[in-house]
Length: 401
Image (tube, rainbow, N blue to C red; front, side, top):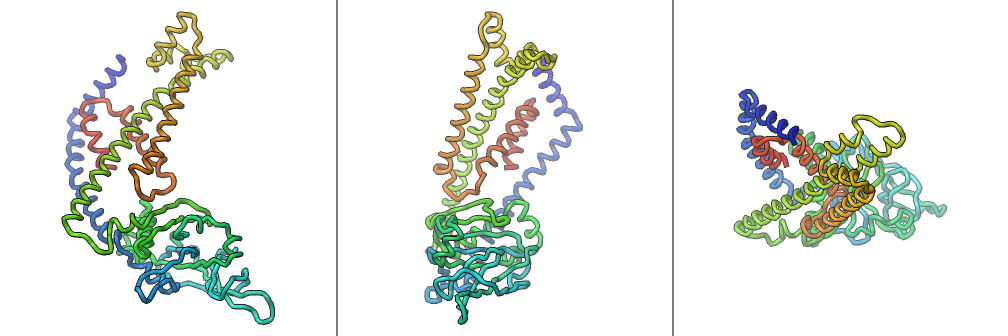
């Protein structure tokens, strides 16, 4: 405890020194303008991309997935859509290659070839049973992202052999990044924040205005998945529209729910991290005892050092050692407690998916939340050691998040 008090005083004096204080005050003064700029950028991007589709409708028209009567996109339930995001013009450097493929059920069927192309048309050979198709290839160097979409998940996860056997239609469309972004700055900035995924989801959702299941592919393998319902699509931008006041109160309610959800998630995650950090210290004692039993004792791994380093466990270890009691029941109880806490946190993640997120989330989203909160909590445990840092750190973290 004396070491903790000394460390606290060192941090306090360092933060209140003249040089550090000037830098700290200047950074605090820059924080509001940075937050304002981020809010403006968020509002501009939200206006440009959310609730509307600009590029995909044209690609769907060229693919024949457009209902001229209702002037809207048309995608049947049994159709699989491959979407490619390319750099430059989506129609440039597009080559058609002729090759044989599996026999479809009708002349308009299409399928993905083993070579990676997509057969977009087929005709029967008059002299034999073979079929010939025109396979569309895009230069891989121009591909920014590849996606696979269907209205239902069952179509996307269906085996390739089943698709070919039953003649399901597979359409291949491409979108140009020059149509999606307004400037070269966005072209370089969006990949840093994985922004293309959100834009592609928005294009699909508001072109079809129905449910959907989307996969992002890399080298033909699934990387991330998203799904949404028709109600989620119609909520932010209904076809009938809504008044300004209703939209304003809806935005306030969304912001309030998001703030409460973030506070709850970060608080529970931070609590679990602190429990895990404290509970994992018990693992050091069996390691030290095993090391001593094998004759490789070290001053750094002695039980006396560990008892002073981790007093919340070391006090009980010392009492049991003086009384001649075994230590393994204590270690087992700590490990069981840590396991139960881990299981409870995983259960919380499952509950949050239905209670708090209420929207499509990429694979691994829970791990990213845990990693972010881990960095915040560990930095807090190690470096936030004074009243000044305790006052600044929450504001800095809130601005960063």
